[in-house]
Image (cartoon, helix red, strand yellow):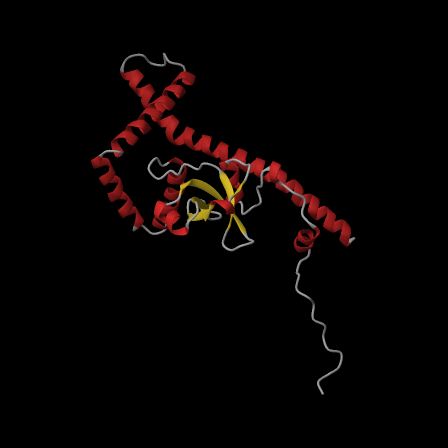
Length: 243
């Protein structure tokens, strides 16, 4: 009975692991589309309808075309905002509002981290160009961490050590926007044949989302560590009482 219950539990969680990511992805996309439709697209479409009515054109443009016009207007607006906020006055305005927002309770605790992640992926000034994925012995020999090659080392450091060092960025898990820049001997670097996005998924998931090409069967020791609820030896109670 206990074995059957364990099998059913394992099958249930396996099925949940397959269905849940798909369901969450679809739910997130539907939520994003509903948010954009009700909050942005509909308001822009209402403005277009009012502008057409003021021009005496009425409903001469079909709704499907108006949606694409709304999308085009939003894209142009974002481009104009990016152009204006890149200037001297725009940057000062952004800095002022960020300082003010940082003092708002709750919002100030969330906004810096969201901005850090968005700048990591979309920021032009702070974006790091990763060349390839590697593994290095960090934080100690025998323990390896995923990292990204970012370039050559400092010349002074190379000359002082007498051999070639290479700069590697080791991202933190589960927030890859933060991490450490390490200068590693070229001989200690192991190239990993996966893409940057696949490596980032592995880091964010804590090593759970490993690319299929890099998956290996767990060894007998790993199976025992995963399957066993505790590896600590049991301590038997003394049979006799205290003398």
